[in-house]
Image 1 (tube, rainbow, N blue to C red):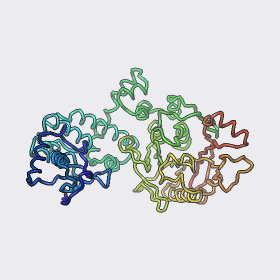
Image 2 (image 1 turned 90 degrees about the vertical axis):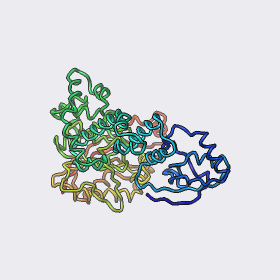
Image 3 (image 1 turned 60 degrees about the horizontal axis):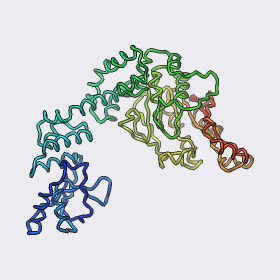
Image 4 (image 1 turned 45 degrees about the vertical axis):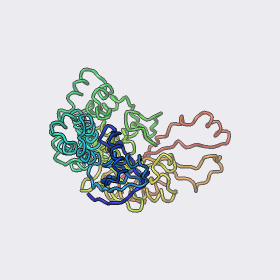
Length: 470
């Protein structure tokens, strides 16, 4: 921890309620400090840290009453010590400093303990107690319900990731715990589904059981469908199985995946899994988005390793963070394990680019977009087994907006033959091409009428291209 002495303008200092351990400020103490300041008494500098959200602001760690007193006497600058905490919890640091002149009362101590634990559940009761001036047992009483909730949440995260056969060391790193903690939790995992199975056996539906126990529905489906064949899983989910190379769905199944730009139907992923993988195969999902592939793999008993640039450890711990640097692509899986199936569903060129991260690939130029795909295909080829298959999902792009069909030019388009060419250039050979078009219902009637009058042809095409290594 480092300390720098200086003066700071009063207006640049903030009392941040998120790290203030007391219920309020005592006007009596403020007046006492103000009177001492007017009488010329030497006052200790207040302690501040650079505000995490504002580069030109500081938030108070110790000295809220002195800060109010300085403002009361009209001071424009305040002597401070700028503290660099080096990983220490700012709320607990502030609480420990507050103990000196005036102990935290019972309500303040309890609230501080609970807030600290909610911010960082890895804090021990001893660490919290040292900061707020309470015993470890007292802190345990303060946070007992939070601990129980956290432990259940941790159980579910580990259980979910373990069912996808993510290695323990990666689970531990992802959840910010030591590997032994993961091992200890896994020892009791066999009993975790018992209550769910009991309810399912009584005739409760999967949605009812998921809501009752607070589990994600795909995870409950993975329990309910244990030991079932893929065909039985299709029937249980009420999905018809397409036998031909045209896969039509009016909408995405909302039970699988998050609400996400460019969300794909779980039914389509299930068809890919059914025809081109077996149960217990490892599926690699490099651009996971809303987690449709991961959820569907859970329901169909496939291992799944998912990656995405959008990091959501609390809601999607099984999707590990990975930024695909277009100038220096690196495979995120270390070790000898290679996937049986790669499901590659990148953001489509230009489509919904405003809804994606500005550093994503959908907003690239046509040349850079295709160059990225070619580099990814080559990288995937070098990290695949001899019999690995890849399902590449993408759509035609034509610049049809406000352009009659006869006036369109090829130079502004990316079509299926462009994808096939770069696949072949990268060492892959297509074996199947499925049409899985977007629903035309997304076009409103007035838009369709205007397009018809101007002889504009819209785009609903979407393809699933299955390839093998040459």
